[in-house]
Image (cartoon, rainbow, N blue to C red; front, side):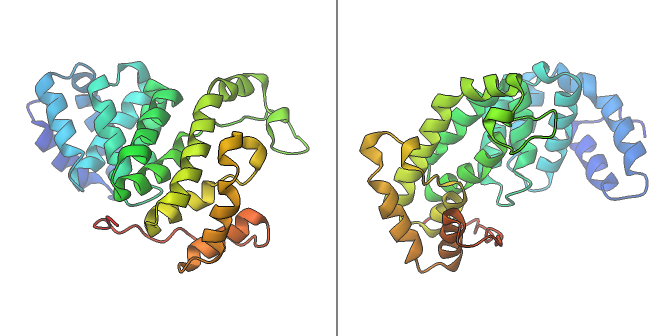
Length: 257
């Protein structure tokens, strides 16, 4: 496949045609070989094409391919102008697993703090659709604790010192997220927002400032008596009375209330 004189539209068509075929591995390897350097040195016009492509259900798959290739080979060379469009794509992605494809390259290239701050901004100020999407995307922006040996439990005290240090460096972000999720769950009656928040809702009063602790029993009461079966189920999981997890119901792309 000779793509040397192709436009990004042509490359995208080649990528989409190759996906899922027997020749996919070879074709995509050749495609990256041909386009990688051009993407690393992308012009303003090139970047604008990728920003627009992220808003298209098919072309965004090609963008995911390119940015993931870059972050595996030269993470610090992912263009800063792609950060906000990638975060937006993660927020607007209704598949709660595929949103990872937009979040992780940003974490690798720009760091956990910037990604968490950008997503939390959507949770605080976005539409209900954006709030739910941002909460879902934040799952993939968590700072992981790493363990290099068999441990009694996968808690922070047994994690590697290096991962503990990274985790502690974002303690303010974690507190901000806990507080924002709790306030949002209590005050926002959107079913989709509450569905997204409930799996991550922390119920330990000691992990909140004094002025927010009174919201915990209120949040529990809301969830226990909610009309939505998923929300009622997940609060029981949070409280330890159920262990079998139900999947998060699909998010309606047109849902705004």
